[in-house]
Every structure is written in C-alpha cells, then in structure tokens.
Image (cartoon, rainbow, N blue to C red):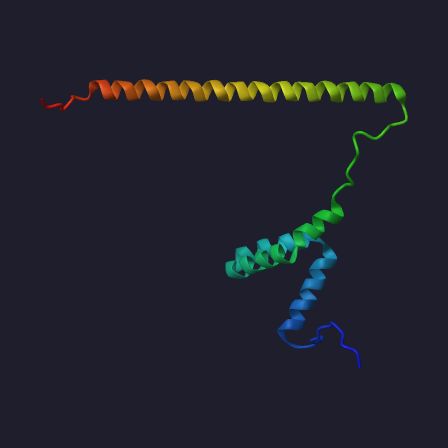
Length: 138
C-alpha cells in the first residue's frame, strides 16, 4: 500500500460548504472574491476581515493578477523595420543619458541642501556658544 498526499474529502458539514463556496468564487474570478469580501465587511465585519486574510495568505490576488495580466514586452526586441529600430535605439540612448544627467542633478541638489543645512547648524551652534555667559572663575 502506498501513501498518498491527498486530504480526506469532506462531503457534509461546514467544511464542505466552505469548500463549495471557495470553488464557486474561484470559478467566477477575482472580482467575485472582492465582491464577497466587501459584502462581508458591510454585513459582518469580522467575517470580512477573515475573508481578506484568507485571500491574502492563499494567494487569491496573486493568482488572479498573474492570469489576467498582459504579457511583458521586450522593448529591445527588433521590430523588423531597420529605420524604426535605429530611431528606437537612439531615443532609448537619449532617454538614458537624460535620466543619468537628472540623477546627477538630484545628487548635486541634495548635496547643496545638506551643505546649507550643515552650515546653518554650525552658525546656530556658534551663536549659541557666543551668547552663553562664561562661568569662568579666576
């Protein structure tokens, strides 16, 4: 006799009802899960919270998003038109240069802001030290 990793099928009781409800909602998609969760929150909020937790931990959002998401497109793939591919390559190169320049500009801007804040801190600190009376006793 070989061991199998199947769970016993419950045909009666609350577990069977929950399994049928899950199958029914799965057959109707992510929208049905969301509608059921919203309705549960409206009528019995603890049930809505439990349903939301189940959806998150069971991956109901991820599974629905993965099946309905459009396929990714490789922007570097050739279109077959040499003129367009050259234009696209030039445009992507130019955009990358602009992004690099903008990132460098933001770095210089942060540096200047940090330096101004530090200079202000040092000026305030020196004013505080100058305005404090000295308690030197001779």
